[in-house]
Picture (cartoon, rainbow, N blue to C red):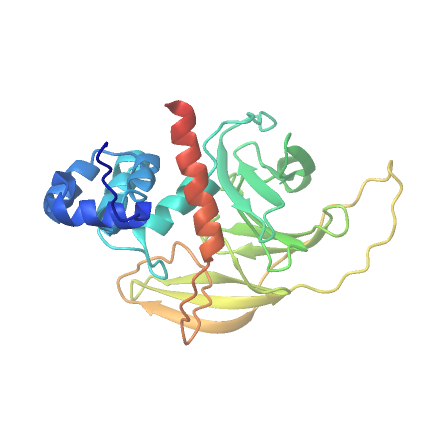
Length: 322
């Protein structure tokens, strides 16, 4: 009679757990420092695949030093600490990987001279460019990018070039800063306010002294500028920071063939807000406005589901390459 051996039926899970207890794998016995060194040679997608192997590898593959190293290798990020408001190097890697433009889609050649400044609207739907050709251009973001507005200030006000621009908070107006250098002794610059709701027509033009005071929006209808005074007897400088209100202008409808008259440049029309005095005759070169909240609230901008979807996408790319 044949001999039959009957054993206890066990589930695959129990078998795997028993094998892990009786036959430990050499990879599970490696210290974290050695695993970190090995994982440092992996790319992002490979790290995510490794994180699915076991709990130990999952913990090590999410070590912040690995993702900081990836940022340095792939994006040349050399910062030693996270920027303010950022919580993880891995999240920063994902932000650059998924949301940074890396493909040249088109080349814009409408300017005839060097572009000096680019400014994006708060909605992200438009951007403006200034140039040594003395034009200000507003573009609509898309594919292809389209030119929405363009004004030649050399033809309009004899400006030498436009050097700076910025949108107000609700993207209804554009501040354009420029300089006119025909007179060597004239330090003045100029700021023009353009309406994006009325076919890019000029609302107001004021002078700035010196020209490096580009101007900055304080709110949707007020911008800042200033003027400089030099005392030759004391060899000191005084700078006045002034505010300028943008009037609510109702433009009349013009015929296409009718040319709009050149705007009047206003002098000394601002309201003084601050006065800075310097006994060393130093000049103020730039003016900007910052809105710093009194209490910074930490917010996790990426939910768990979006994290999983992004991880899957990066892993999928690795599989396709392999």
